[in-house]
Image (tube, rainbow, N blue to C red):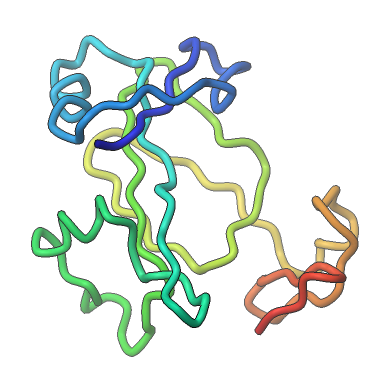
Length: 150
């Protein structure tokens, strides 16, 4: 059983939805129908091991892990820190709003388009971040004061 985030199909309310428990095949069927633009599969929760370290992927991704390479050739010698899946079907277009991710991303768009607006790590001090900046790494990774990590 997995959850799907559902909200009004307008751009202004995207991401303000709620979770609807359903299996992945049920969700995939809704998306494949082309008639549903309200459901969106977003970041899945991962479990932690006994040391408190998060798993590489959620239970859903573990189920699908034989359907994709864990380290695509395009990544060279980079090692994935987290593997996730996002899926949706919007004819109107949606936005996740300005945010930053904690890991580098490799996006594969199966159908349609995805537009990114990227900012230099040097611009961080002029942005409204969610906390007080501790350190901005050269690759753009942000550490907040009180939440330091490598």
